[in-house]
Image (cartoon, rainbow, N blue to C red; front, side):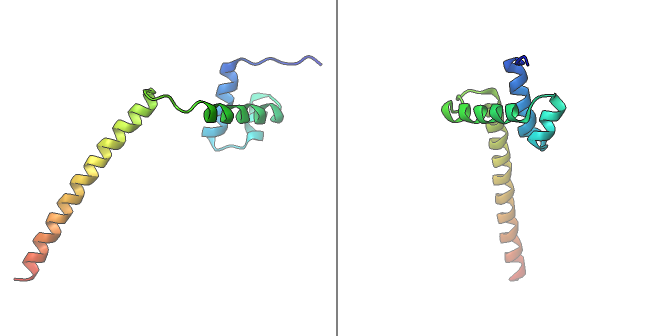
Length: 96
């Protein structure tokens, strides 16, 4: 039996499917026509790489997420201030 070779891109896409699709490793392996043990090994290798190589600062995804979270945080801060002012206003009106 000849050993099949897969590209790094195929391996990365298979791992991404496992992580993002919510499907089991067995289902993904069957769909891709690869062995379950191969996929399990790829997922483990990917996990090891993430541990060994922490995310690089400056990654586009990280920067976009950070920008979105900062914007969301500012909106929440403004809403909280508005609610504080409204509560103070109604507390004052209620005491009259």
